[in-house]
Amino acid sequence: MGCGSCGTVVRIPVHAPGEVGAGTPRTAPRSAGTQAEEPQPQDPQDPQAQDPQAQDPRPGDPRRPDPSGTNPAHGAPPPGAPPVPRPAFRPVTIRTARDAVATAALYLRWLGFQDVRQPDGRPIPSAAVDLRAPGLVAQVDPTTAPAGLRAVECVWLNGLTASATSVYFALAGYTEDARTRADELGIPLFVMDLTGMPQPVNDPADQLMGAGA
Image 1 (cartoon, rainbow, N blue to C red):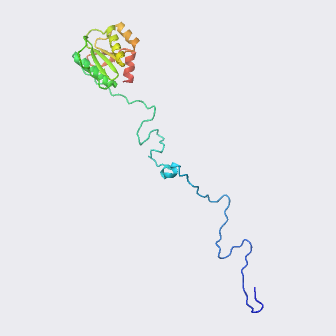
Image 2 (cartoon, helix red, strand yellow; image 1 turned 135 degrees about the vertical axis):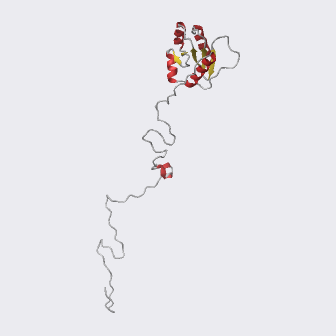
Image 3 (cartoon, rainbow, N blue to C red; image 1 turned 90 degrees about the horizontal axis):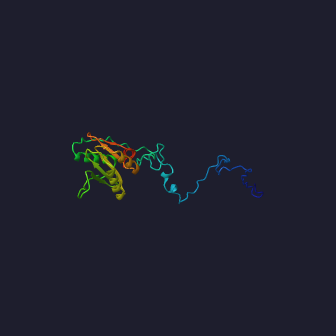
């Protein structure tokens, strides 16, 4: 553009539509498929937003599920795991009546009964010796005569009164009617030989020996 009187010429740059000037930075257009995603605001109530480690727990973290089924932080076995087997019972040779009572007490502890002891107080007028523990009433017959019906019913009544499991040990075994009555009442019967190894006589005794206290 020029002035007719003074002859001064002024040049004004003119750009075509869509053309960017030299002083303006050129920006490439974004396609729909490559459009950058804007960060989304995080919810302050979300516990994962407050704790970055909660979003991606590291291996060994208690919050990370373990495919083996156990939690390394607690070391607990998975549900349904078989119980830990008991060690073999170590018998004690029976030479006296005191040995028979001691063997029965050891066997009851091996089954899982705690604090097995002979109760204090005046002994009852019977050849059988009482043994007690929490949830247990037991009698030990160290004589050479088979335990009879009355002995089995007596230990059952004592257990019924104490709301406890009744167990009977005998050196010489049991009479036929005593075994029948014990099966009806669900009383475990054990017989002990001189080697000190109690043996189950009926089904309730087998169940107690297998499951324990």
